[in-house]
Length: 236
Image (cartoon, rainbow, N blue to C red):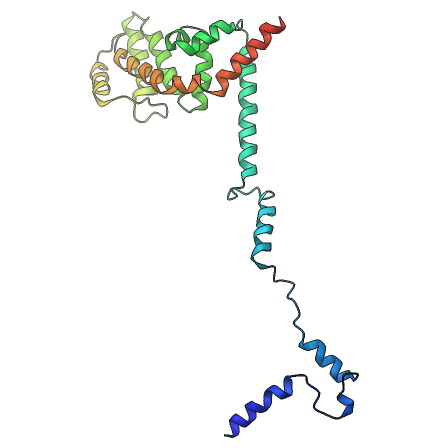
């Protein structure tokens, strides 16, 4: 019972209400201090959920760490990639070789065979380099040169180099071949001929035609080539 009486008396002692004589009135120092301390004081650190979200939205655009997924970084990266391809298209058209005509560039978009038999092959190679699949056209070009050889010693040496560069599973430039074609090459490597890589070359050619070529025709690089060439012919 003594404990209950003590707790019951506590609220009146901290309520801040004047219970003494006239000295504790509203004009007194004690009453004024009591009234001020009873008002809630806002916590300056309490920003609330909406302010935290606003802060995150503002600081995200200034955060350049790799963990940031701000959309402004995506825009910057896309702009940089576009400027890079525009520059590449200009450099390809301003090379030592005579620039292709607009009509020739259009034929590249209509026929993969015409592309590979023209100066457009160099441009297609640059596109494959951007796609990290340059080894396909490098292998195809190496096979084209290899088929011209007739000396058995040269054929054996070049066959070994092509195998090490593009067929070996240890090579960083290994091309994608099915097991049947790969087994046939392994068998022929004991006595290679100028036709050892014929099947593999056809398979890689077909791969580039079906997989990489459609993306090349629809790429911004190909469109820039046509646009830049069109401007040159218009100003000429």
